[in-house]
Length: 510
Image 1 (cartoon, rainbow, N blue to C red):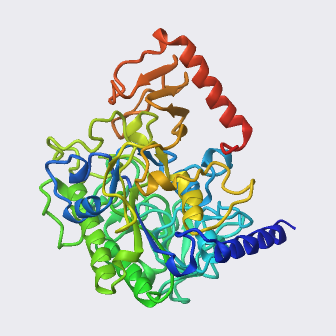
Image 2 (cartoon, rainbow, N blue to C red):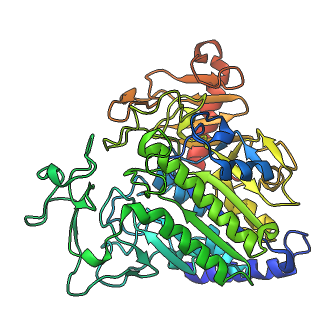
């Protein structure tokens, strides 16, 4: 019954798109959409956001040609929940099982839910998910790596998928295209375990002499391409990826899809591996940044952006394509490998002027780079509008002339005027998710009292936990150094009540 209701609702949305008289909704003017979603890229990691030690000319050019947002947020300070929220329009913390997904997780996006790609697909777009997925594949029993891998991206709105199933530091280290592992030899089946070693296969812990990159914490189980991973794996030798080729492989697949579908509207969700660990950039970039593999991976990410833009220009699609560039959460320097990221950081500040980073309730956990380029439609410049990636679904629905039902995308707001930089007004408030939920309203940020460690010593990041409530005036104190909760008790009470209302209501939209 749920699927029937979804089908009828989506049919209605498709009719609305065709009948829309909005200038952005007319079928002849539907723009292509390319969403380049970086991994663990911090607010201060690219030069158009203030980085001095590293240059990102292609990302900088994107910013010059569009709008650069300075107060845009991922919904979470970690990857899986941010991706879930962006694709469903629902805060991930409302849905069970949306923490950092293990490598053998089942699909966590409900198939009866309207998604960002599904909405665009029903509006006539060809949709592709390319790169990092990390939202699970398969039914409740988990993925069958040697058989048909479904449900997955194709069951939640994508026409095509070429994926890294989870993350590069987790097994299995293979590509999945649509419903199958790429290049899998049936005579060499894949076995994956996240509980115990498999036979006498070497591990990073027992065989460090086989590693070309050693672990700093964790990441010492299965060895693939000379790198220790999380989890154990045997078999699938012909299907294993080469880390140095990941960026080129994903970029080439995105270019191929764009080229193939250049005559019709397309949506490409290009979720890069860069700059997540393990950072093993191609020889074209290795050693070029002076900041070790992390800096080199930033250069490689910038190259990916450049190749996508060159392709759009060559195919004469540049003017009718919205390019969105952003990141899934804030930065982390040492996230489990001895890659000299800390030693070679120097004066570079991955979080820029912000406090915290990945995993943190402080602003660097979720405030991320976000750039939108659409020649002739997006007003060039810089915007301080408060935005959340959870709003992409409702915003792009409005852009393409579609309507959403009351139960669809419950936390997604239409931010089209701010998205096009026609207005500086963004959200009234947003909820940010780390170990604790916090709320930002205007210039104020409230973090409730919480238990737990103040700092993750493995990654050297402050987590934002404190037994007392925290209140920061971000206009005066962007670095969240002065907790003023004690001097604004009425505001603390007001923001606490608003956060509780959003959390318990089940929907942020009216």
